[in-house]
Length: 528
Image (cartoon, rainbow, N blue to C red; front, side, top):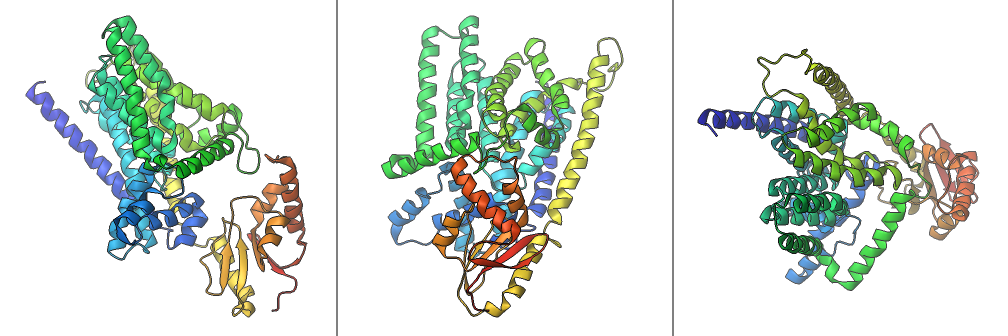
């Protein structure tokens, strides 16, 4: 590389890092908002609220090193792998040592930034490097485009394992491409990151087609001997398995392993069917979310077409073949074998979107945009520029909603109403049930309980609640005749309860108050 080219590359890299830094700062400002306490976090993002107590327990003071390691490794919430929890706990540890672990806004800002935003930015930078190498104006343009995808923005606004999963998936693609069918050290590094991606959310298993493609191409191009390919393939599987187990050390305990397998089966059922009720699956069920988070399938066809063109005509044919081989298996799964959520598709759509860089000419100066060869490229590029404008508009709305979501929030106001309506019972020890989407910061005389499961009379009677705080929207959702339960007999019992709640006639309770947000039921023999 000539000295002038190297300098230009360094300046472009610096520009991309500056853009990435500004993006990181912007998200840090937003990510500390609307997180005043655990109750507010749980109301807006129940998944986040569930995680906090487990991470706090991982770093809690303990008697001796053994007990400290034990509670750190056996964190009990095995829905997500140990790498996600370990990194989150390492963020929490200095806060605990400084006496700041109860500062929920600070804790949430740090975990969202370092577990979601930072890995996402690194993944995008790696994709930009793979597509352009920081050699031209295309790199900062592609960086801005990728980071503006609404699905990326939404994923950057919560604390969840998907950012890490995306980073490890992109690193797997990076090292498979860098290996260039030589089946050497980079091939084994790809195995390592595949193991990490598998350890967190099992996503790494979907690399079977991309890895298989490298073996097929290696065989036909004879870039390596058959014996070497077989040996390195066995090493790939071995490294992946060892990384998976080492990344989840609780797997070495039979009782923790049994718990993990039980949760795995439960999660498989939930993802394939739904949470208590059957969620719609398939192409048409996914369309609204795709439109909202990815700009729609019609526009997504452009970067997908760029990836296909890159396989047959591009300068990096292997890279684009790997991207497509990675894209297909997970896409089929999230469309047809599970209910669609935007973050499930993001690990494969982000690399596909990076292929839009192929529409940009290497040099702006001297490019004849509307000659016979470039007219289609120019039209497609104009469409994607228009799409970028739509992305930015959507992102602005996402930020605006996020910034103001705690102001004049009806669910927060409902808790103030609850406190007022139950003021006469302040000195009584009440056992209170509340729907998890309601705001419940707690009360000195209340024992509060919630559940993600559907309610029924058996649950209410078994727990002997004094007060029920129900979200009206949840009642409406479950009495909808079009909704089907995963377990029809159990769902029939739940629907009876929710129909009674809708009518204000829950057995053993009386309706004390109802507004547009929620309903307050108190036990009939409760003294006021």
